[in-house]
Length: 152
Image (cartoon, rainbow, N blue to C red; front, side):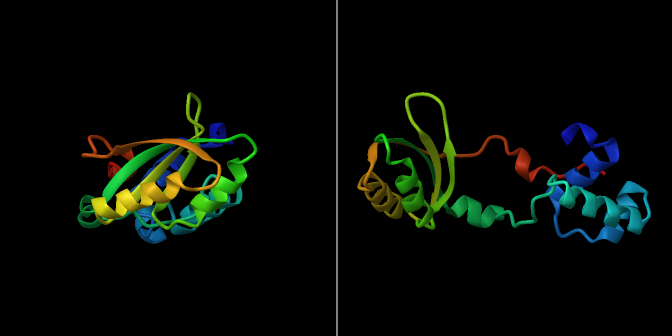
């Protein structure tokens, strides 16, 4: 599917990643296409599963005020599904990825304070099936391509 994307599709996706709320008319102007052509491309990209949805990226004010951390988690055999269900119930858990190596999962956490993070890590460590955790607090972000502005 990704090999069927042409340069215009890729430019359209780049513009949407920079601002998913950009009106079709403005996208069309930036792409030098008719509005109906852009709307048609968007519909095709959605139908083909290239665009799964539209979302909100947090602004720098909220992003910088948050305490962010990556927590590696090792689980006991036969408990992964239950651990994932428990993690899904925690609003501060933003992402859970299955990873290779000595740990089973990498969990991205966002809290308001270090104290909240400390309590959350205690809670995660007590989840039935969690064998071991290792956490690193994010000090600063040096590169973030998710927030890149598309070139005009």
